[in-house]
Length: 185
Image (cartoon, rainbow, N blue to C red; front, side, top):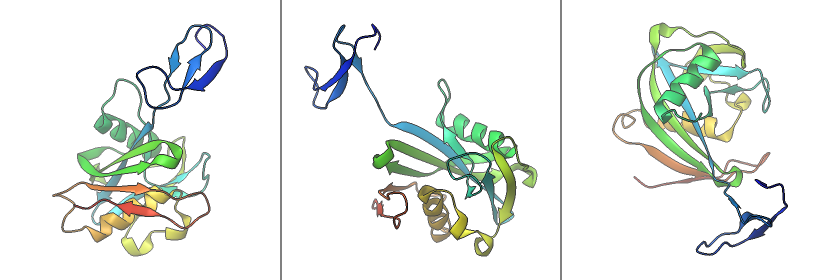
């Protein structure tokens, strides 16, 4: 595609996977997983959720998260997403969980921290924000399986969340029951 010629799927010399290779100049077009970073922010025992103002899952609740940008760290990206989606400032962010979503070629890095001053408000990508106790979370209105899994683990791991990073593979297909393969400690 650099020279405008068609690409074909083939295994390049020295590789072990099919790649898109240009028929004109032999350039290999690598396609690698996308990194998604996000925050689970807590304030006085409640967690911050954002109601999405954009597709996919318009009108459903999520944790502030999104694709990393070039030239930023995972921590910077997570904090940026919290600000973009909820005008939220983060304190004491640390890695909470890593989720592999091989079906859609994404890796989620979810951070846990404190919502500075308890302040958040809807921004361009968000219809509304809210702080929720565990019993108030709209579990049936969560946007993505990774959000459900993150919140579930967060409440299950109350005593461990400062001492370890949780890891799992989310294998769910759209509309199907959540299929999670949890990695051992």
